[in-house]
Length: 393
Ligand code: HEC
Ligand code: HEC
Ligand code: HEC
Ligand code: HEC
Ligand code: HEC
Ligand code: HEC
Image 1 (tube, rainbow, N blue to C red):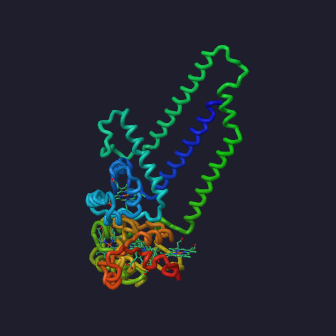
Image 2 (cartoon, rainbow, N blue to C red):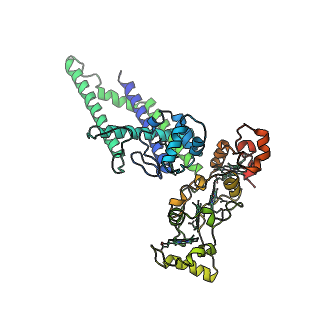
Image 3 (cartoon, rainbow, N blue to C red):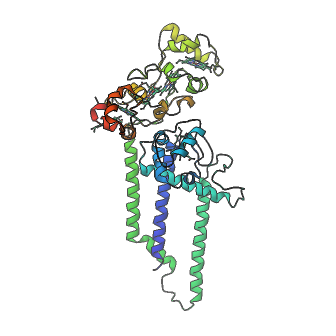
């Protein structure tokens, strides 16, 4: 009787931690893996030991992850550290994750912490020289198999110990009544009991419904969308390697609603002279020349597409708001082919408006407001940025 309860709670506890870790892992892979790995540097730093570097203050980490630029330019507990890191990473801007809730980010952090601990545990018996936070182990091996082996081994040991203890207890009491149910019978009975099955069914149901709601909320959103384009145009070559300014091609971006896709004329400024490329020879560039000669525009496939009921204006955000393209579009200068980086959901717009402080000093548009509101911090929300009609026709 006395072992039934601990066993049950142990079972639920491990089920919970497992589900929690799964969630964090999936979120990490969907949002962070393009720039981070736990055990090696990618675009951003290796995340193992990040908790230590942040003084184990998850609340601060959440703030940083939700909007790293606001954190770096703000006045938070670890702003000095974040600023230094930002300089160290050549001012690579980490995406703002205003669309992720605090609970979701904490799940990701839980996953990072668990992976850090698993790494440290795996490194010790192997006799590796160092397990300190800054150490980078070679390669980018996925450590989850190691974790599983560890869990299985520990489980096996626990079961073996349990069986041995029970057998010993029996041996030491030879007068035991053989008709009494054995420990194994008790365990089986406990697992088959109504309370247990009921609780397991309830947990399963809760998990399924939360998964369904999460999926349903993503209907109509196309994060990650990356269609094949008619010409093998690379942002990595043009905006990255040759450092051509975004505005050189997307000429509308500071003037009006649409950023605009460049016409063939703009390509011809250079490709009149560059008619052979290092990768495709004349094949791809010939398509530009053909378009120019025939006057038929290249039919680029649209990547980003808000529904018709939404009004979004680039100039308002880029010129007036001073927001970098990468905050919304990600590291385009590293993309061979552009893909949709943010989910473009309403929650994404709203969260940023809730949190972004409007810079009133650098902007003549707000000169008058500035006079009135001196020394006060103003969010987009306070300027009316959450009113339905601002974004909806
Ligand atoms: C576009 C690339 C990019 C993405 C995506 C990204 N990060 Fe980062 N991250 C960076 C860079 C670059 C830094 C270094 C600081 C800086 O430049 O602002 C950083 C720094 C960090 C740090 C501080 C690390 C330290 O050593 O103190 C944490 C924590 C972090 N990121 C977590 C996350 C999480 C969690 C996600 C996913 C929700 C994520 N990042 C997604 C690029 C990215
Ligand atoms: C040499 C010209 C050129 C430069 C420079 C350039 N782009 Fe582009 N961009 C294009 C072309 C052409 C397309 C359409 C084809 C495609 O989607 O790859 C495009 C597409 C895009 C799209 C997707 C548009 C859609 O269909 O939704 C985004 C976002 C984008 N560019 C952002 C940027 C950013 C940010 C920069 C600067 C870092 C930049 N571009 C620099 C030519 C350019
Ligand atoms: C400011 C100059 C400039 C502009 C404008 C420009 N390009 Fe380029 N493009 C280059 C350079 C430089 C290369 C690299 C050539 C090489 O591979 O050696 C290149 C390479 C390419 C290649 C790859 C060729 C290959 O075989 O590797 C394609 C395709 C291409 N450009 C398409 C475009 C298109 C489409 C536009 C218009 C939207 C455009 N470019 C506008 C300078 C430009
Ligand atoms: C505040 C977020 C945000 C910023 C900052 C931003 N964009 Fe966009 N961009 C969007 C959204 C949202 C769309 C989809 C618009 C639509 O479908 O009407 C988009 C669409 C585009 C497109 C497709 C054509 C169009 O205009 O619809 C291009 C190209 C583009 N952006 C380039 C850029 C460049 C270049 C910059 C920086 C100079 C930039 N964007 C800054 C959010 C942003
Ligand atoms: C990265 C942060 C960010 C995101 C994401 C963002 N915005 Fe904004 N938005 C701003 C800022 C900052 C301003 C204020 C600019 C200014 O006027 O100084 C603004 C202003 C606006 C305004 C004008 C509000 C007013 O009162 O004049 C509209 C409309 C708007 N945004 C629509 C959108 C829509 C629609 C989306 C999503 C598709 C979106 N925004 C996503 C930062 C953001
Ligand atoms: C900052 C910009 C912004 C504001 C403010 C805003 N919305 Fe939205 N809204 C959006 C965007 C972007 C979408 C489309 C996202 C998507 O496809 O899920 C959307 C979608 C919707 C939809 C769903 C349409 C559909 O097809 O599913 C409804 C309903 C809606 N908004 C109502 C409202 C109401 C009511 C308010 C005022 C309380 C409001 N919105 C304020 C940006 C905004």
